Amino acid sequence: MTIKRSLAALGLTITTLVLAACGGGSANPLGSSAPPSGSAGGTSTPVVVGSANFTESQVLAEVYAQALSAKGLQASTKPNIGSREVYLKALEDSSIQIVPEYTGNLLLYVDKNATATTQEELASALPAALPSGLKIGKVSAAADQDVYVVTKEFSQKNNLTSLADLAKVSSSVVLGGPSELATRAYGPQGLKGVYGATLKQFKPYDSPAVKTKDLLDGKIQMGEYFTTESAIADNGFVALADPQSMILPQNVVPLMRGDVADNAQVKAALDPVQAALTTEELTALNKQVDVDRMDPNEVAAQWLKDKGLA
Amino acid sequence: MSYFSYLFDASRWAGDGGTGQLLLQHLAYTVAAVLIGAVVAIPLGILIGHTGRGGFLVIGLSNAARAIPSIGFLVLVVLLLGTGFGKTVLVLAVLALPAILTATAAGIAGADPDAVYAARALGMTGGQIVRKVEWPLAVPLVVSGLRSATLQVVATATVAAFAAGGGLGQLLISGQRSRDYGQMLAGAVLIAALAVVLDLLIGGVGLLAARRARPRSKTRTPAGVARA
Image 1 (cartoon, chains in turn yellow, red):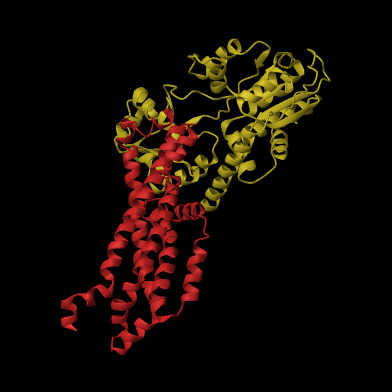
Image 2 (cartoon, rainbow over the protein chains, first blue to last red):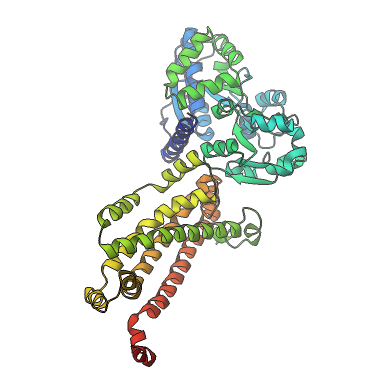
């Protein structure tokens, strides 16, 4: 079962890589003709929800669009636009009006010198940092950010649930993560600088499935994942807390054109969605699309129905 | 010029995960895989070539094994058995096997029939024929089999990085992920250089071995004649 799942995850990784490669090569998929921008307060103006080129963004865009439709707005999606550079441009020229975003990375993109580190600081710093004409909606508790995990046995044996306690055992810990982690501020140097934990070794992994296998086999003691990866819950891994906020929070937030953000109907449709989303729910949604091969459209519809939002 | 800065940066060569360590890992994978491949394939090839039996099946199978996509095979092995040096070597040895096996079998089977008949007429046993006649005649082909197997393994050992096994493939993968093309180039250049060096080395050893193994040179010496 685990193998099957790992293989599925691997297949997904490869698909994602291929898709990413395709996305990079193609020209701006939005074309040059932008639809007329909606006037403030217009109730029947069509709203287009864009999304980035990965599963989670597409599912979130579907959720937003369907929640808006349920409130009587004319909403459609424009999935798989590309990277942040591309979809922010689309937002500025109004070919899309809403796009799901992540607080930490969005702030760093619009303000390279931003110093906010906690969830609250990010939420308060974002509105001022955004280009004029763009606003964020309600920040969700759901977050897709980097996280360090250990197996349940390792956690219990060493009484380890937080990075703050890592220093006690770190001399025997081999960390596995994507190769670029070695140079990230929250990578091995961050663990040393912020938590005083000097690791035995960092081992680069380029396949998440292989990393999970090695963590389960005890070849590495700590792995670096994304909070919404289903491998964490499926294998009972323990996510280590980050009390010093070394890792920038990446809470889900809708980024919108100002006139759309001020629309009461849009607010009424999206705020309950943002309130209902949790990291676990988001993980489950991703898994339905990536592992169970369901359509993002159906996954979103089912979730909204379950939550009584559509 | 800046593309080569990674390759010639001494600080990148040192330490854990440094270029020097990756190069040694790559070399270790290659040597171990070719050795294991040779230990299995050469006796098997001699048996097939000498008896003339089973060649169709074994060589057919091992040639089919060439078609196995190595990266997929490696990931399959790793997910079933776990990661580790031995498992990666196993996968690479499977890749080295066909070239050595086919070359050995062809070399033994292709030994000059007149020489083999003459040896038999002199009363040599099967084992003596293999050792004194067929093997020396087959050596150049066996060496060429080893050469092509080594080249294939050096090139393919890059997949070890995919199973967290290090090797020069790590430079390619890490470089690609962090858009450090100098790092990728360093990996590519080193893999190519390693392939050329190993090829020349085996070629040189093969030349010496072929010269020593030639039965003719022995009979030509006065001592050899006297003994006969």
